[in-house]
Amino acid sequence: MARRIVFAQNAGFHNDPQSRLFVDQWIDLDWQHKVFTNSWTGEMKGAGPSYEVGFLDHYSGRISEHGVIRAPDDIAWLRSAIDDRHPSSAPFKLVARIHQLGLIRDGKKGFEIEVLTGDDAEALTRAAKREQAIATFKEVWWLVPIGIGVLWWMF
Image (cartoon, rainbow, N blue to C red):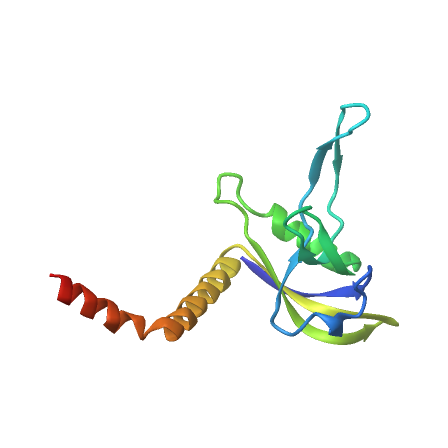
């Protein structure tokens, strides 16, 4: 139930944000702690979030890094927004989208992303799904009268 605009510094292989990014584009943010097994020893290990910003590769599960959130106050806000949820609540929802591109802060190039959590993220997700359903209906509306005509003719 929080919303904040955070600064992501350009980083990684895809460090030119104008090449693939645009305003209001949904983007992924690495905010979860990771638990994995060491392949050599078999021991369980953990790692904290890297706060990388980019697009999730569904095959490898990694983010193609376009930027990194490095500001201590932005990271502290993200941690508090994530940790403030009630343990018995529904699965945690975090949504991020591009807010502004081509910024320079403290001599570092980057871009701003809008981060929404909780109910705000749910509302944004529902609105995006509704917009997508309306756009799909606008494309295939002409099939509805044909379907009604075929059903009327069959019965």
